[in-house]
Length: 292
Image 1 (cartoon, rainbow, N blue to C red):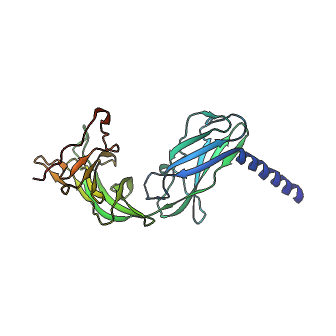
Image 2: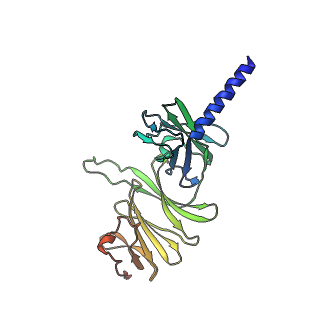
Image 3: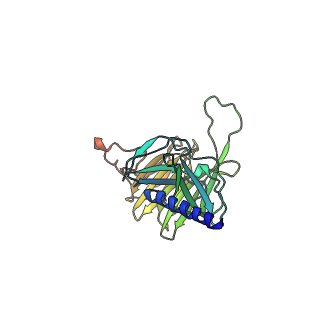
């Protein structure tokens, strides 16, 4: 009896090995470290080497994810990441599936975690697992924070405003680069939005200002003579990004109407500007703004 069970297990593992050799699943992430609340974009690459055409996505749970912490416990899920759309892969073809995993797992404690993807192949009634992909959930250094009231929308009653907080954090990734992050924190202390702002030089200090519309303006130095300027709304959305070169020292100042803008320096049009520049129309950088 024992010999029969052992033989069955050997045959089962051999069958799974053949399946995983014919169809491979690989998980990758854009970076190896994330802040709590930050998006975790993952890419699942499915490669078909079976010699036949395979169809995926015929059921809503054809691609499933699990996460495990360093001590072996499974991370609780808020739900399954929706991956919809049927497609076929001929032999030797591959497909990349992109999904943000952060909303679907309860990740709050710093530590090391691994992601595993499971792909169902209905034609074979088999499931193929990826190798675990590791990442670290880390804490940044808080640089600044400020409470603000969320502006009322049209039709809202005259009630006290909802209060939130902006916060800036810096993260030193493996001591190789410093990245600046902005957070929007709700009144219960939960981080609702985390937005990576960009790399920052080690000796620079960001200059944050909140305007009369409760938007957060940030001017920070990202190179020896380069500055970036971003504006974030109360929902954690990036609504403006511009780049400036040090000719005179750029800074954020308010005009007579209380509107914030950058004065000083020389604006440099870039393809990563928000809103995007109209480069096809030959748009040039504006002249340097003088400081009054």
